[in-house]
Length: 186
Length: 190
Image 1 (spheres, rainbow over the protein chains, first blue to last red):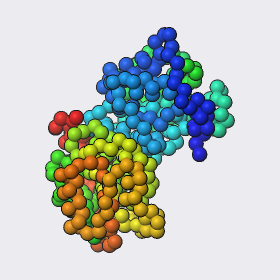
Image 2 (cartoon, one colour):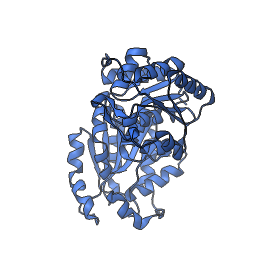
Image 3 (spheres, each protein chain N blue to C red):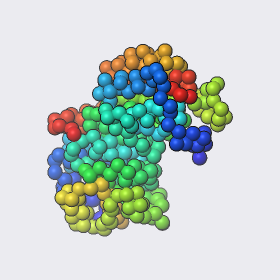
Image 4 (cartoon, rainbow over the protein chains, first blue to last red):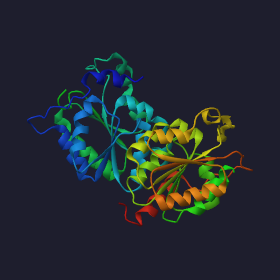
């Protein structure tokens, strides 16, 4: 059983409340669409629930729910080979489910990935089982050769936009690692 | 029927514009040896992901997509059937060559050799499915799908082993990806 489900049960069915200011999620979707990314593949996390809801409601995006992250990686690669831009929206725990596929498919074939990752298991975490993976997430991404961009607060949005442009230009894999304090409504 | 005979029959049946995604190891080696096409994608690692790559292609392209998979690889990513049934692109054919074993690693038996019915699992996931036992019936089943379309799984029982192993494709990963993407880019996507 994954710890993701345990924690998310408490807010099952909850839709994030709209924020009076422009939400970080809206700006992120605008930037993704600007770079021709129109497919969002997600295994959800409550931190990115608003991002997923907004993508669902945004005619510029198709949202796809694979059974697990590794499968989503395969779908993203298929889309990329078809000339379509894809982003994966996932929890950091799911990175562990993608390691072999990332190495033998993305690295070996030279096919970069764009990942938007919720960072569970840090000092703000209330589910203890998330902590071991949370503590290893940045090192795991670095070991895989994926550029890590930490998003700590909404003030980091310009970094997101800059690094997304670099990912699209340089064709290198990137993981945007969003802390609890970055996302709306938590 | 053995696996290379099944693969040859499928590749002979599909028109040039059809996209073919080949499972890890022998299926890719044999497809490349028997009928190397620019629109073949040879998946040399990422065990289990051929149907997922195929689904990403089918949802992003207008051409038909055929995935040549194995029973061991499908069992490794059985959740992919749920996703295929959920989104059910009409241009998607998932062919499982079921030899009841992990053929590439010493023919260790898989669950299909004992209990698992992949065609029934596919139906439970919302796909149409059928089973074939001979090369002739496999060719006919692919021809029917080419006419009818629909998100479908065909399970082809391969009770015989190949005579000899096929060599690795003479391409690197980036060469496979570039040739394949280039071939797709020559025609409009969606």
